[in-house]
Length: 289
Length: 249
Image: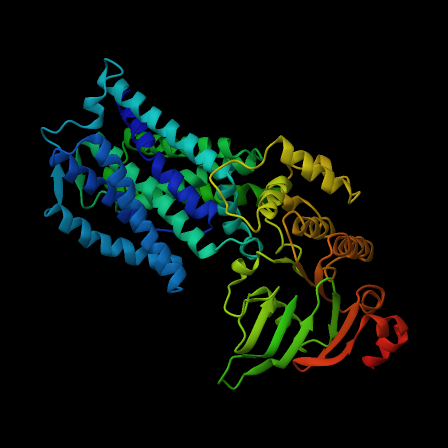
């Protein structure tokens, strides 16, 4: 049972990645893979500041700013230098590997003797439940914030930027700046996932971000399949489904491990799973026609 | 209102495929004029419109809108004065956003997009009133995504959207080219009414010579990147539809 509880908590940690990918991929229509780097950056900044006895209320904004900066650089490379967004993201992630390693000075920082967010806040007696409640509150808060943002005039302009660029330029929006802001927001959220995960697992590692973009893509694709299937138009519900997608994704991995699949094969199984969800709507469609 | 001074535009400059789209064009359009532009394909009509809108920049010459030099201004900066309706009904609206959200964005075309919710009951009521004037029954479908509407409905709504915020110049690039004859007529009538009611300065590009005859206060025929004929309001009244047809034969 603990096994699935851990999967649930991990899923909540990854909610930031799922929302970040949802913003870059679904709202802005930009394939952004700065994720691997900005997630690790979030973890690295968290571990560094916490081991240097910085208070939590400084660590969190610092992490989000670091992630946002990484996203903004990807955005700048893409919009100002007209580099394909995929390449921009790859270049920034690649550079971030060196930056993260330099920041840490070694490949792994354990949070030994450091009080994490989950140690400092006591809302429940049981530590697992305590972690769960804190994570739930944070995820709820960012979902509400993003949901509200998408309803504001700025949020509408964001959505239109990814949906009809000619239209929104004619309506007075500098789409280049909007894309930079969007990628900054997305990667700020992704860094937030790194912040939560580092404190949850008790260490930051240079390799923690490798392939993490798949987690976000998988979550968004699970959500999208349901959104299309049930024809959901509500922005709020879509965000909730994206987070549910992140949890479902971790659950599937937990089930995979629990039925005895070799842990070395986990990434292969993950890839096949994502492929399966992507192709599921098409497979059922071809049967009908 | 709109002044072009010795404007040149060459695409693929310096290459074998170089095309002179606009050739030393000077043009003055007065406030309140409704200019119809006709001409063969490749005569520079759309390039002219894009130069005024700021989607592309002139190689030489200057462009002014309402006395402001906009030659180096980007399209999103010129949107302070200029509203556009595109040839493709898909370009003027965001398909995944609802009708009301599209209208909200249009209503703040000249303003900052702030971090506050602008779609409220008052705004809904205002948009509803506007859309009712179209008589298409869309006023009860405000929450429907724009993408579910037909091309004619979207084009008519795009026109209405252009006057949601203060607008001086309306650019219409073959707005009815993708529409069936009935929708085309509704869109043209709506455009004519809005231009008249809001006293807009408008430029319409069309291949429909009947529309060119019926609408507008000034008629320009373009050829090889410059004006071939420029018919003022009075002379246009004396023109017959056959005269215009004969220009192309």
